Length: 68
Image (cartoon, one colour):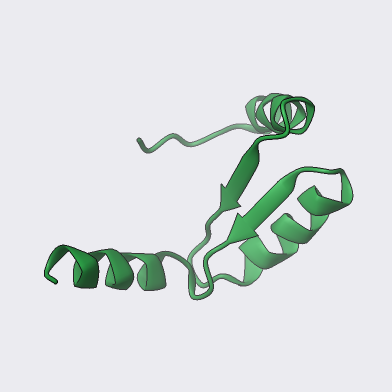
């Protein structure tokens, strides 16, 4: 599901994620911004992960797995 979030929505989702101990995946185009964001989320006790290489790496991996 693709969903673009505004600041207030994102804040609410992250607050809920922290309270419920949910894991969060942060994804950006090249992986650099998501690394920074994930670090910030971890500082406030949100377990956050990123995809090294961003959207292109994720797409490439999914495409490979679908054709395997």
